[in-house]
Length: 173
Image (tube, rainbow, N blue to C red; front, side, top):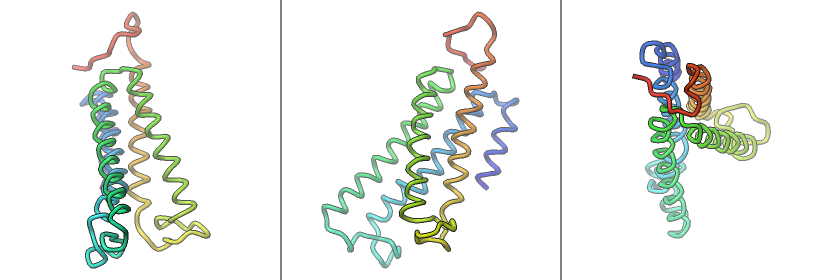
């Protein structure tokens, strides 16, 4: 379903504008990664083993639980910030926004790759890590794809500006 939304946003670019399409692709990507990582982290911190087999509310000390809750909230807050940057400054063509979103993507992609290879495979057949029969790589893959395609589409939209507008923010509609 999320992959269909990515395809839909790419194909709708002519109708809704390339910048808007790119911004919403990034928001979709950030949302998918957020639901799969910091939002689940928050859930696992408040859930016990009866609510989720990985719930840690009764399994860890209050200090550890507080840190897990903090990490989940900070992750969701960072995602909201990245979504705001995508829908405002990036959509207007401000170069700093592309750099912020690009570095955000790099940090997330490297972290996901490292934890998938070294800690938990998320359902991928990675030798030496548990989780081969699990679910989780699909939303991450589509999220990272949407985020990357949004950055690419947004940058290519800025590179096609009419002559004489160098440095001026590009506004669609």
